[in-house]
Image 1 (cartoon, rainbow, N blue to C red):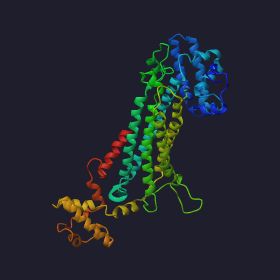
Image 2 (image 1 turned 120 degrees about the vertical axis):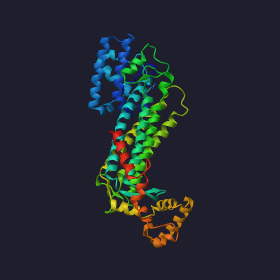
Image 3 (image 1 turned 60 degrees about the vertical axis):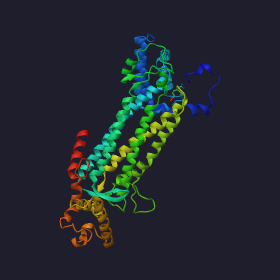
Image 4 (image 1 turned 90 degrees about the vertical axis):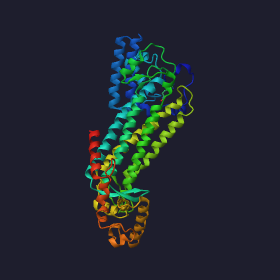
Length: 457
Ligand code: ARG
């Protein structure tokens, strides 16, 4: 039965009911709705709407319902209740009869749904933080195992300077650390309880909302009822966090897809996260990574969708706001899945060191080294840059690496070049020299791994 029959003499059109009802997606808020209801029943005792005995009866019925919901959440979907709030109230009335009808005193579904969703968001942030943490740990472990795997680093997808696979892993650790801190930040702002704001103007019962907030585990209660029932900033923030996090994962996926190509051949993905072709027997496709890259799109879509839903909405609650949940649930589920899948991908990765090294040696990734060498011999950098450019053209013409040119050949470009140039051109020297904080030197990378391990515990 609907919660609002008295004013109506005609039943809702079935098609409208289907269009309007939110139970099929907000059933996921069942636990939060019950938790919020228990807290509200306690608040009603403080304003003498319920006696202690009545409250205890309601609380134990609600706890019973909570256990039923936990055991079988899908059962909720069998009901034709309008939304999760009507469902919980209906079930409560089934259990305790008329007493159940007192629970909604002084409360509105508007402050109720805002509370339920914030409670859900807070729990989900904890889950996402854990998954973000787990992926960082997996990346650090992969870095640790691949400190000596030299490979080309790219700008413009052109070989630029040598890096190590470990350094590449640590770049993503940094992105994920920022994702983590964004979530923690959002958590602080959403930790404010909406309950007791009523439909829009506040509740008519003199409830201590700070105490009520505390019972629900919120740091405090909101300050303005009009804002509270229509505020979905926390949804926007989490969707933004998810969007940024998914952008990071899509870049991670794209890098690995490229490293895994026949053309690069820097690594091989495990059979556990790849799939074959129905036609071409030789194929082993990086589907897990492609899906991570692809799913980024729907998460950005959810953020844009919610922005547009909230844009220009008049105060206070409007039914438009019911559109907050499906996109949010989907976006956060997707992000979580992709975080987990990324761990699985890393788990089976096989770095092909000889091939990585070979690629790093080709492509003139040590050209900057030669320029720096000339600078050390007193040539101004701009001039050195030009000289090395010409030297590279010659090496390309001969089809060899810079270090394969003879001393006489090198000296044609600059008389200051001597025998001591060769060790400078080695990959190891390229890495070793980049020893300022954040650089790719083995010492810096080992330090960064240690710091990350300390932070991640
Ligand atoms: N299903 C609604 C939502 O998700 C709950 C609030 C309904 N409030 C109302 N006055 N109709 O937003």
